[in-house]
Length: 287
Image (cartoon, rainbow, N blue to C red):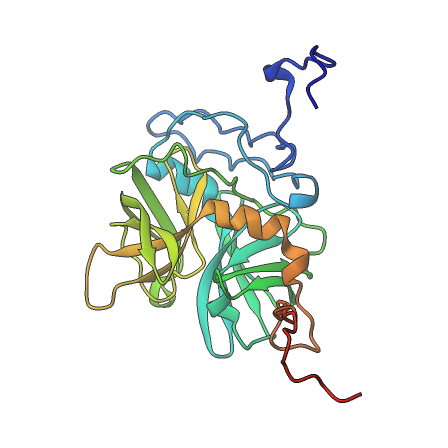
């Protein structure tokens, strides 16, 4: 109802978008190291973004070279192993929560995660065997896992970006384990942001994607995840695809709807269609 006068006036700049939750501060990226200097210190551990588990930059940051970003963010990218295969994944906060593809862990509950920790300017490989499935959405090929045997360690995590500011032709890079070759880095550009395949939209990239890259992050040059690599066109080059990061955010916000249950191998939960209204003349069930 229009009362004819303003009851409350809130300045637009004071309005907080509650749809994504309050964003936690982005990690401080160290300044580029001079030539010949020691390896840059990794970005500080991430802090969970409220109930959404991830963190994100509240404003566009500076761009860095792929070399610098790989050094800073490489610890956050992991190899996900199951008895039937392997894929990639990445930590979204320092508590050990990580994202991978659903098809990487489909039908499996025995999961391990290989992480390369930087210790005294060297990389030390460690395998974590107690990995719990938190949620999975097979319709968008996403899964949320948690390392349970971290012993209180703070994991290096990466921030989630957005595709709104991503431009066709912009440089991106992927880190993963194609064909089991750990810590492989590939670089390319965004070919299109809206490639429709099987009713869903994907980022298309020229960054080489192969079996084993699935579930790994696609980064922009600010070190933000803009997509989750999950497929390529077989027998072709330069036709890789990634799930837009907005789908990851939505999955994390609504993860309760896809919560994993050991007693239900088809988890996340399936919601059946509601019963339709009976019309005149329709057969009714016997009581």
